[in-house]
Amino acid sequence: LTWIRENQKRKVEEWIQEKYARLTERKQNKLQKAWSYLKRNWKGIQERLKETEENIGSSTESHVSHILSARMSSRPMGWSLKGADHVAQLRIYLKNGRDLSELLLPLKTEGTEGAEKEDEKRCFSAHEILAWEKQKQKKNGKYIEALQATVSRQTGAKFYFQSAIAGIC
Image (cartoon, rainbow, N blue to C red; front, top):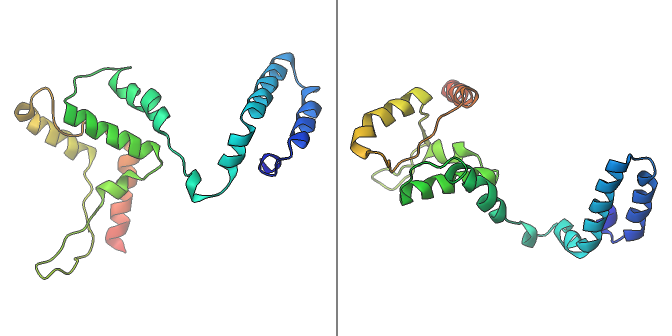
């Protein structure tokens, strides 16, 4: 990457030629394809490697082709427009590397005099979420206007221990 960033195409090519001789035919084909890709996209890769705020990037295309379709078309289910939008927003949020606990845990409230109270934290267990869904199922019908999800044991344990530790400190 340093050679690409410093526009040393010749060094990259020499390195590839050196490695090429020691590879199997299958891996040689892969290396040829990779080198061809690098040559075609050299300028774009250099721009991408510059550490500027303009190169933050976006994962929009992968969201459309992978993340959203994984839930909405690969394994289709009934969705209301509002529910589908909520799920899409959360999946995009997670794909961008954000922490879901940032959305779920800190709830800032303001007092009557306008002063901020301490962050109020509330963690819902998987059991509480499922109980709520069962309770609201008849009212909401087939197309529920709420997030439908399950929480893995690992995630549940993580939130449990975080809230327990927060209670001690």
